[in-house]
Length: 125
Image (cartoon, rainbow, N blue to C red; front, side, top):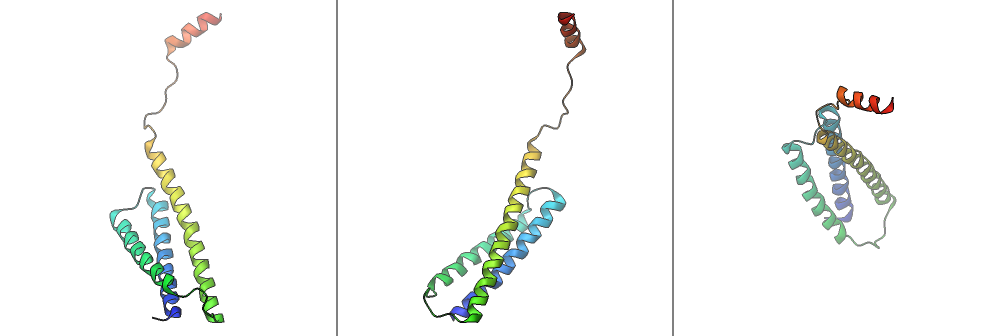
């Protein structure tokens, strides 16, 4: 496989990762709970493919001459990666917010008892 093809496949995978992050974001906003098992498994499968893609990119010589098309492809891929990272950060914040909201006690707080208020009033008067 040529370095250009390797880079193109990596960019396609980044597009799939971005779509997965978007789907996760929509799910979190709509359901306000962590992902279900199917979406989690899809993310794991994409991460395995990402590891393979990164290994293939490491084989490509770093100092080889690049043309403008390759530079353009690299810039598009970097841009997509930044979008994925920003969306993933937002998803992590949503997950944190929903997990903290679930940890709060469900019982409402009650005010002081009437007998306690009478004792306090008696001491002050």
